[in-house]
Amino acid sequence: MSRLFQILETTAFCMRRVVVVCCLLVMIGFAGTGGVAAREPVDTNAGPLFGGQWTWVNNTSSQTTSLDTLPSIAEDYTATWCTSCVKVEHVLQDMEEDGSIQKYHFHRANDHEDPFGSNETELYFDSRYEAKVPPIVVFNGTQKQVGSTPNSDSLEEDYTALISQSLNLGSGNTTFSWASQESNTGIISWSIDINLTLFADYQLSVNAWFVEASAEFTEGSNGEEIYPNIVTTIVEVGNSKTGSATLDVPNSYDGDDMQVHLMYQLTPIEVDTGDDVKETEDSNSIPSISIIASLSCVVAAAALLQRK
Image 1 (tube, helix red, strand yellow):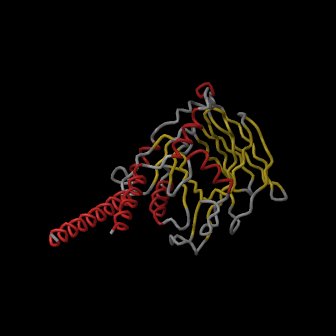
Image 2 (image 1 turned 30 degrees about the horizontal axis):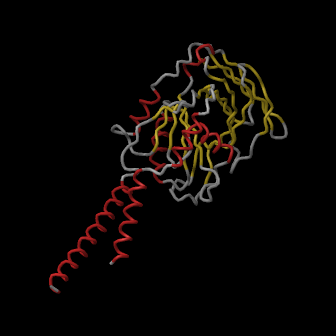
Image 3 (image 1 turned 90 degrees about the vertical axis):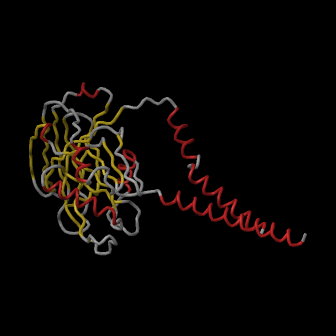
């Protein structure tokens, strides 16, 4: 009888160990799936972004461009410690050099390993596209692709497909003027010929983006050292098709290479029904199934070991 009891006790102990190992394997399975598979691009629902006419802040310039020849705009959310961002940015650099896009880099704010981010640019990117973990690339304000794993044969093929989606701005043109002034200021003027009846559900916003052409940061752990096209400041200058404004020019991180860019946003006019807030709160308050499963396994494993 004593021998039978020992056999049963040993069998129960072995079964408990099997359960613990299985729980650990389940946890590893859940933890290991994140960030491996490619993520399909999504519609941002933020509205079109277009423009890109620019000049150096210490110049005086005026230029008129037809809407159908404006460059595709690529907004890249990045950080100086982000190694996977390097792959993305090299692809964007190649595409800019062959004339496919005009790129802008938004660095994470309040990051002790990245000196280029600001609360202002972080708020802009997060409010439009949800700034989470870089890299994130948004094309023309409408299509967002997260991560550095391509969905097709290459990132360049992915990005080319995304920029091929027309914004349907119609015919017309945009005029951008900049006059450098004393005391580190300048006057920006704009005029856009666009049929806004095509965008009856959108609000036009005109913005000046100050962009540092490049800055050196050798402490960046992704090894790039030189970081280009850094958006440092965004100023909303109006919401009419014609206007002008006097702007303060921000300081560069290093050198004397600040630019001013004219950008147009068409932001959806939202109707507040009260449902969106509740949905967001509910979705944020409920843990994901993978987290619940993992925690359940931990609790079960701990209980079994405690019984032993």
